[in-house]
Length: 576
Image (cartoon, rainbow, N blue to C red; front, side, top):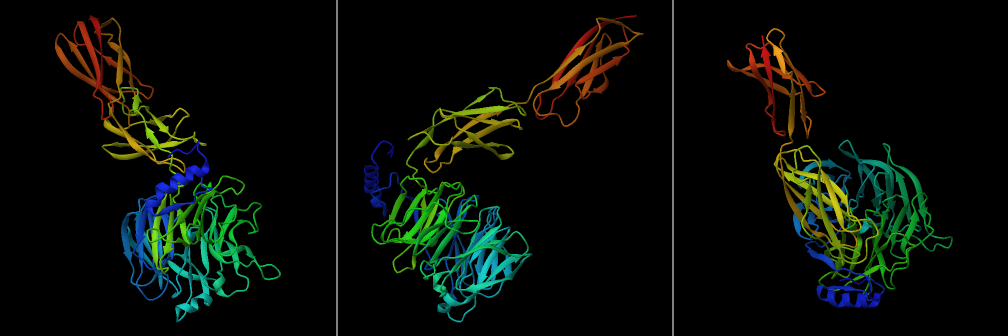
């Protein structure tokens, strides 16, 4: 639905009517644009402890069993909300974390950290750790995995247990020496900045819970910033539910169950100069997450009735654009966002929200394309290519047009392209879409035969993905050519000296071309010694004719897998 020229309230009202049947209510105002969850999956779990998003393999990993003696499971879903697998464990499972390249999944168990190959979902490592009975939290930062451990006899004691910070190095999980009271929370800093965030929950019983930042670039963590929030009267203490670093590393957002969303400067954890507007009245902050490009922030909450449980808005608090507001209600989608229940895909095209409802032991996974994939896109017309006669090893341009609804995008859209040939699939990167919708994909096919180009638009925060468009190009051999020059006349005693040039377009030859030389005279045709072309493409042929009259010399190259053959001839009249 294109709402660009309608009042905000009308747009939201219409969308509310459309989406109500899907179990998702969109607040009537001030949401200018809204999109329902593209998919909602009821999770087969009764507890929840962690969420990780793998944008490389387009999978979502959810850990179910935070503590207790029951065997746990890591659930695996795809970006369409379909269950892919369940990774069983023999003991309780708590946190999950991904390596920065998404190649390895880490899952916390009571007595170890286990790893999986995310490509195959096969377990490929087990690392013993201090025994934990309170739910091992995991975070990947500074090239390693950080975890917590606490040991108590009864789970109700976890809130005030002593919790240690551990690190996985050289295949061993060892304690770092840092510890404090309560179920300490961990979160990675910005990618590539070697920071680890640690927070103390209010349930720890600490009078003034802390938030801290650690430098984890070395062999041991070094605390470089910390803060306690209570004032001199003991008011305003941290009630931590979740925390997240902005992708540029300058800010930290904190979901505070009492204060709402706090935005802090990452350097010293002081209040940022600008703050987000308050959550709706009656909403308790539970989760926070920045989009991968840093443009948007999602703020989750628990709220009753039609009060919004999720706000998606600009990450810049000075941006006055009204947020998208979602209210989850009822048995089809839960009653609110669970603590630490938000995560984005890397490109920001999808937001994943875990909601909780019922007695607090029912969970749902929502796959959302905010702030609204309400603007459609499509490829118009067929792809074309030039030059029309494509040859291996030479530039080829594939052109097309993308059309979109709604206003012009603030930043140029980009399409991605792949080439599929007999050697497999080859990623060609991205191409920028011009203001008129046209784009050009540049390639240099390196194999003779059919090459099929597939161009995709995967969508962004304001545009739906487009249906892929394909185009098949027949790639031929690159041409080669020979020239041969000789004298008009020669003598049997003086011999014949011929010169020539050889050129081959397309991909350079792996080695210099070797030419065959044949001589035809009145006595017949025979082969002469072959010649090798020089680095500059020139060659020479010298011969002592065996008879008088017309003698024809022919040089030829047979070609190879990527180049056509070539032939050239010259005729010389030979005298005595």
